[in-house]
Length: 230
DNA sequence: ACAACGATACCCT
DNA sequence: GGGTATCGTTGTT
Image (cartoon, rainbow, N blue to C red; front, side, top):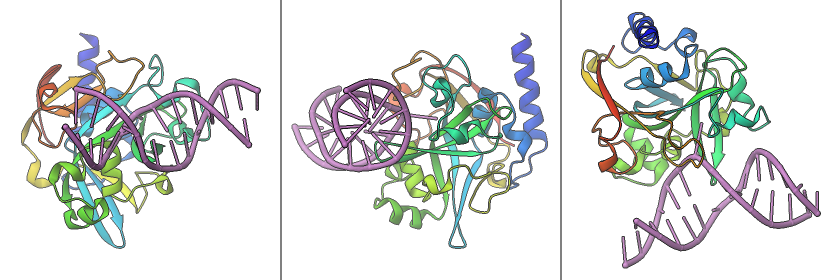
């Protein structure tokens, strides 16, 4: 009961101050990782590149915890690769896997080693550029999957360690005005593509959204609830 | 030095 | 649903 009440308060604190299209501030990221993970759904991930905005609505994320989570890159302590994960909340952590890039948002107080992996976004601005960067046209081929969305937004390890609160290259914004007030259902389920801690339900996504990764029959698995954007 | 292995994606059936 | 390309990081000689 106490945990639920705390989460409720955290959610209110993060949404009350957010105005449509406004960049998310440092306080957004400094919360417990699971709270940040679910609050990231519906927010706008923005990449400014050559004076042009590329952006997408966050529709799927995974939490990677600072303790008790063997699947987290921070589990074996800090290293040159994961150093950004131990920086202050709101830091961008980009890592390579299978010769591709994936993007995380650092959470919690500095030094904890917790982050949220963004696994899928819905293209919002600059779709044609994303299609060119990806070399693909189909909606599900553009930004569904953590490495695909990085390629679509031209995010590489060059952006590793950026401060999302101050950077002019990458940041997050509150949901666009067009989406404020829209009711959505969130599903919480197990994470994808890991071999440790496979049973922890730390994956969050918008129920039934066509651009969520994984098989459609898994989309309704797990526990779900509704929330109102903005 | 070197070998193993991923928080993947692509292409094939 | 399954096999594999591909390469940086890591841990081991």
